[in-house]
Length: 625
Image (cartoon, rainbow, N blue to C red; front, side):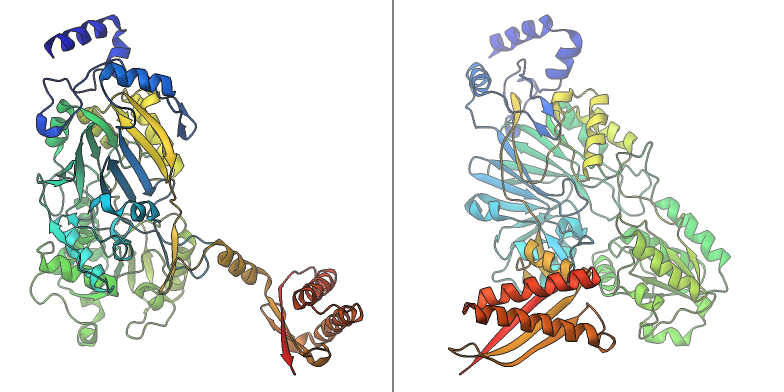
């Protein structure tokens, strides 16, 4: 072993200094690798894995075999990293890590429907690959308690009943979600503390303290047989957090000294220079707003999961002698859980029920509510639309949006703001929010501490992933070692190589009410078509055997024209249908499908010529003996 290390050192001296630093300087030496880390014990010049567009070019089989023989490793023995969601989008974060007979799953989140997903409530990841390999799945490891990281668990656990590992508050929020769903079997849940490591198959996972817009967020150090993977989760560097301690940068540095094979880093704010401001700065802004609005009722809309933000609102309310009302089901659930677990310090008698509001003057009240993203059925949206049963917006109310609109929600938020303003409320949409995600300098700090061999950007749209890859290259990661993946890609990685070796099914599954996966692209296309063009139903009754017309045709229109004002059009349409039916009978056509096609084609051509519209036409034929 000693001779091998000496030979490797001589080989490295022959390399140009910059190249040696890029390829070798980031790999842990045999001496520094501890047995418990189960690191690869080689230090060699590595073959390139060339990056082309969004994909990594596969290393040729000959090259792989040659390197494997040289390093005494087997082809196909690398770690597989399989993102099943969360890439090229914000939300639905879930990644599988597989080595031989062991799979661990990091996070299991949902995403909210896009504009074209009419009637869809939410989207969950497709875990077909996990179902097919269910015997390998050792557990779910959760970084924090946001919906895009835990929201799909109740759906996925029905098919994959594996243990869940998470920090205290995160597990409390998961518990709330599982109570709302009936699972066929109980799920094992284990609360993990920072610094604690759990053994799952051939993996060892350590939770590292970080800061985020929700308490108890964690990064993960995943010790694998081929090296250490550091997954940052959603994080920022906050030296003055409202609750808890600062991010454990020392542990990141210690891992960097051991040798980090790959860093999977948060890309959400990667296009923003500098540092993310501390959450504590928002508290001063709230104090100023409360001081300026001493004679007005204050309503604050924020994310239900932002416990630290709620804490600062409560602190300002106490300082200015106001009572606090919590409105919105998710807000009530999160605050109740956070209070029970000790993550919220609520002064005695400051919280009151909504029914008690009438006992206090408006200037002595603060409402903390959901609806900061303009959600149609959220509490604030219902107040703005005058359909909330207990709260009405009054002239002089001060409404604070303590969040930034998620991309795609801008129109909804603007609509609510306009409705509030029309009712005489003063709306504040700036200076009361800071992000929970790292900006460029914070991400650079993590790279400087961990010194990874590979950079794998996660959590972001493609523009974010690409910008993250460029930042990693600035930090000394070779371009060929910065890997941009898409959901479903199978990346096999080891100190010797990183290559795409396959693709798995990873399309989102749409949830509509209680239906999971029963709405697909065809149904969505029909919904889109109906919303744009409307529907015409043609009903007629034929005699059995002779196909003689007994009743109809009757025409029912929905979303096409207002029938009472278009009687002439409907009469002409009936004539077109009748003529089409006559042609079929004259030609002895008795096949109903052919009759329906003839009716649809004839009526469609007439309506397009007459109105330049193309509604969905649905013929219905009934038969009577």
